[in-house]
Image (tube, rainbow, N blue to C red; front, side, top):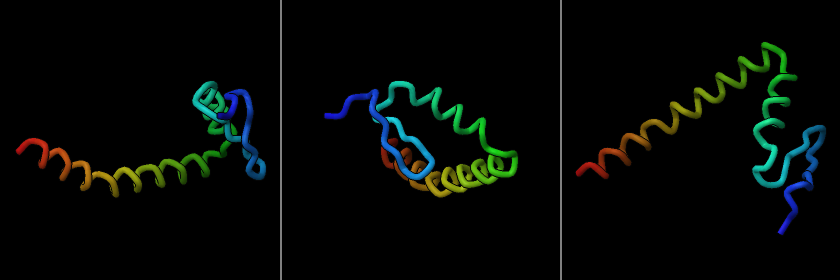
Length: 65
């Protein structure tokens, strides 16, 4: 098992092991993005939500019956 204080390195990005400190590290990473990069990130996240939405609706409908 890995210690949460250890980091995994991938190129210029440092990925934390475990959840401890993840929220703060993610906020710092996002703060460094330019406006254009933030908009692209949001668009990508929206596409992912829209892609997952039909599956979620099917799951909710099947659990109601």
